[in-house]
Image (cartoon, rainbow, N blue to C red):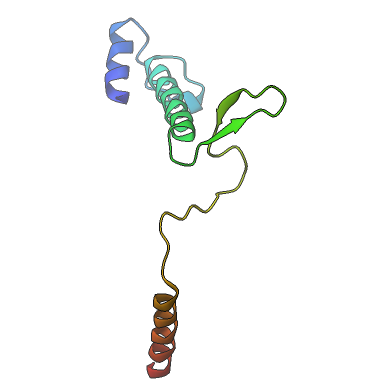
Length: 103
């Protein structure tokens, strides 16, 4: 994608000075870098709103609902998709204890 954007910028008439955006460039290379950065931000925003951790929030003041972003807090919530029977957890613990005894 970056190479295609760079070629399009050169064909559009931007100067091909090969100076990157973080080096204060303003030519075709810097343009391609800035397009890649903006597209990266868009992917991050899509990941925030298009995943299984998005919650539906109903406003208590007027009853309207909206989707809240998955990462609106600086914490990762734990989501359990399955439950494990208690007897299998006991087997796991005893198996670990036996393993530690042997080694």
